[in-house]
Amino acid sequence: MSPLVFQALMSMGPAVLSKLFGNDPQKKLQKQIMQLLSPEQQAALTQKFYQANISSPGFSQAQGTIAAGANQASNQVAGNLAARGIGTSGTGAILSGLAPSLVGSQQGQLRAGAMTSAQDQARATTNAQIAALQGTSGPSQTQQYLAGGLESFGPVFESWLKQKFPNSFQPAPAGGGYGPGATH
Image 1 (tube, helix red, strand yellow):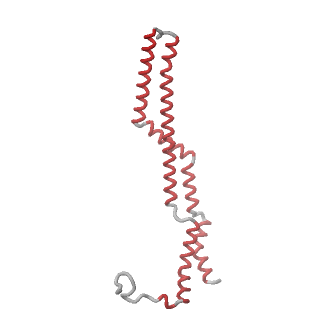
Image 2 (cartoon, rainbow, N blue to C red):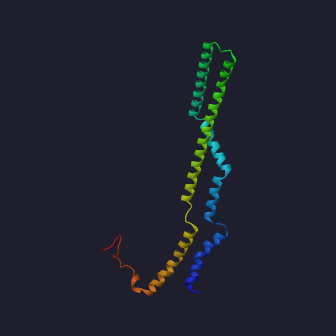
Image 3 (cartoon, one colour):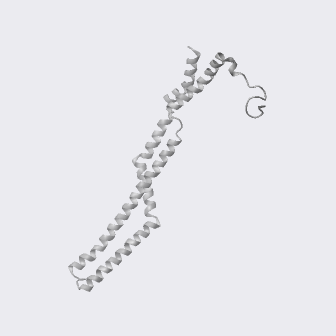
């Protein structure tokens, strides 16, 4: 076997063996991403953001605004019905009963908005986590093989060049060359 082939096998051997025994960074990355995208993880993250949204001062303020608006509307309806003399009629009873329905509808819309916001926040957080994982996942398998091959062939290639062009690889004279202490 030629020394070049032997050296290539020796350099790529660890990468191939680690791949065979489960040390694959791409599979690890894929597993982490799938875990982030799992329905359970997404539901937990959405619930976390939803709870934060409905516990916020802004949500409480919106609920207060809905209640105040409903009270004002209910009072206006009652006053208008009484002014017309139909406050105790069937029409008055129906119109008075619409206020709680209006409040429930607006509260439902407020909670739906909080849920939509929570889903958007969860999605954005997951996307940021995936981007961070992909940015730190390291070189791909192909890049690892190429780097390993180049690293192993470097000394062989240098040796071959020294044999073919022996005068091209002379050590720099003391104090000469480039860098600190150069005399040029």
